[in-house]
Structures are given as C-alpha cells and as structure tokens.
Length: 378
Ligand code: HEM
Figure 1 (cartoon, rainbow, N blue to C red):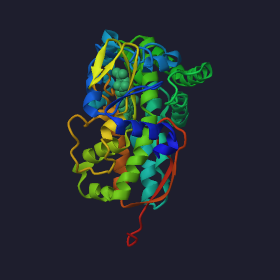
Figure 2 (figure 1 turned 90 degrees about the vertical axis):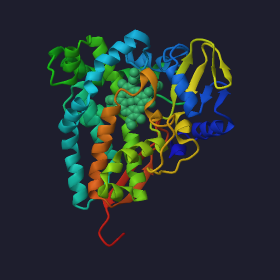
Figure 3 (figure 1 turned 180 degrees about the horizontal axis):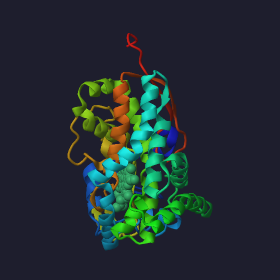
Figure 4 (figure 1 turned 180 degrees about the vertical axis):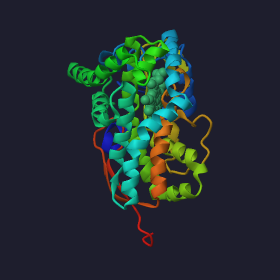
C-alpha cells in the first residue's frame, strides 16, 4: 500500500530510518525517525516552528491564507485553538455524530445485514464528507460535494515537493472556495445550529472562522478515509472484529494499534528557528525538520497486535504532540468508533476485493469490498 502511494519516497523514508534516528538528507531536510526525539522537537516551540522555511506554512498559506492553525504559532494560535476547542467537547462531538454519522451509517448497517457487499472506502468518504459538510454549514446531503472539495485541496500536495506551483495554488484555492462559500453564508446568518454560526457565537471573526473551516477540511478528511478502511481490513483479517463483538472493551486498543501500524499522518514538518541539537545532530536556523511519524510510531514493527502496550513515547504520536496536537482527535475517534461499530455488529466479515490507491498523499485503499461471512463458511 505504501509503495502504491509513494513508490520512491516510501522506500527512502524506511531506508533513512535504518541509517539512524536523525539523518540529514540533501534537499529533503533533517529526518527524525525516533519517537522520543520527535516529541522533543514537537514540544520545543522556541527552536522549531510550523511557520518558517520548508514548514507547513510555506506549503499551505498561499492556498488557505495565514490563519488556519496549522500555519500559526504563539499567542494567536493558542487563542484560536482555545476558542475552537468548544466545538470538540465530548458533548459537541456526541451531538454532531448523532446528527450526521448515525443517518449515514444506517444504510451501511442495512446493506451488511442483508448480506450484500459494501465498499468501506465509499462509506468512509460519505461519513467524512457529511461531517465536513456539517462543519462548513452545508447540508449533510451534500457530503459527496464536500468530500470532493476537501480532497481536491489536499490532492495538490506531493511529499517530495516542498512548495506548490502557481497552478496547484489556483486549484487548491478554487476547491477551498467551494467550502468557504457556504461557510460565509452560515457565519453571516449566525444560526448557532450550524458550526460556522457557533464559531461566530464563540467570538471568532469571519476570517478566523473560514480559517478553521479550511483547517478542518485539510486535516479531517483524507486521514479518516485512509484510516478507516485500513483498520477494517486489519481487524477483519485478524479475527479482531469477532473479538470486539464478544468484548467491546478492546475497541480503543484496536483503534490505537491500527493507528500505530498505519499512521495516517505519516510525516510532520517543522522549520528550525534557533541553533539546536536533535539527538546528536546539530541543526541550523532555516533548516527543515521532517518528522517521519510512520517510522517513529512503528519502530520497525508493523505487526497489528492490539494487545501490545506501545512505549509511552510512541503512544498517540500519530495525533502529534505539543501545541499543535490534533484538535479534531475526539471527533476523529468518534467517527472511527461509529464506523467500526457497524462492522463489528456485522462480523464475521470477509474481504471480497481490495484495490490500493495509487500516487496519493496518504496511502489507503481505493476500494475495500467486504461482506458478511455466511455461517458455516468460516
Ligand atoms: C485519523 C484521523 C486523524 C489523524 C491521524 C490526525 C493527525 C493529526 C496530526 C498528526 C496533527 C498535528 C500535525 C503537526 O503537528 O504537524 C493534526 C493536527 C490537526 N488536526 Fe488532525 N488528525 C486526524 C483527524 C482530524 C479530524 C477529523 C479533524 C477535524 C475535523 C482534525 C483536525 C485537526 C486540526 C484542526 C489540526 C491542527 C491543529 C493545530 O495546528 O493547532 N484532525 N492532526
């Protein structure tokens, strides 16, 4: 799967991890493949930033503007995050999932119960699209449109290219406008039943609300559409779906181990602002640091075993660390749980067909067809 997405870059990343925990690679940056060192970098905001040369800000700001959390630092960043955190409380996430996920997943549940084959990738796209539609103030029935727009924004990025071309910037902006258009309308209407309306109520300016919409679209769609089908394949293929049906208390461990093995956010970027050391390696201002989360989380062991207890440094690293830790984690986990629950209810499942997505930013399936296994066929 990784080779399908990044036939050149992925073997390079793995090879670099074998060379050492911190390796300077010409034209790429200083690659960090160790979990403890990755955390040190993410927590050290004095020396490492998301806004300098080669950082995410360099990449995204031309498309999404200057205030989308993931290209901000310092007090403005902290304030925006604090304000937005009201959208991701357990209550807010629970209500959002009940409103959006439940209707989306009803159809999937019925199809599986009827013994028909379903495509988990399509189901994940519908779910993530409906959630994004809700976040930008679009009707959840326009989930496909919201998903297509969000994925067109992330689709312009390639791992090997640190900057976007003028054409990619234009494409990204056009896709973003399809999401921010409805968000502006919802914000101006100020109805707290819509998320942009709530953002206004929380005290965000229109520009900040649109920045948040862009941040959610960038971070909250491809990650889930990559992850959920991969988790489904891992859990179905290893017998864990049936185990979860018998004992749901393992759910969080299964989801966390799936994230450790698949790492849907394979890389995090930082720019060096002051002379520093990462492990034994000295780094200079202006250098780019590439945190290979995929190598750091897997630590050379890609076996899916929910009974393992990952080292403290590794646990949760797939959601980042420090001030930029994934703001949407509660929502991401709720969406993953909701879809996994439907699959567990239908277990045992057989995988009818799987096709890997080629040349995409985040590795994943293009199609994963599963069907309820008839009794006596196991
Ligand atoms: C499995 C799914 C997800 C994974 C693995 C994931 C992972 C991450 C990671 C690693 C970061 C930090 C990047 C860095 O420090 O450079 C991040 C940031 C972020 N994520 Fe997620 N994410 C997921 C889903 C979501 C969802 C569903 C949303 C909300 C709609 C979301 C919203 C955000 C936001 C807003 C940030 C930026 C936070 C900031 O810069 O302060 N994420 N995510």
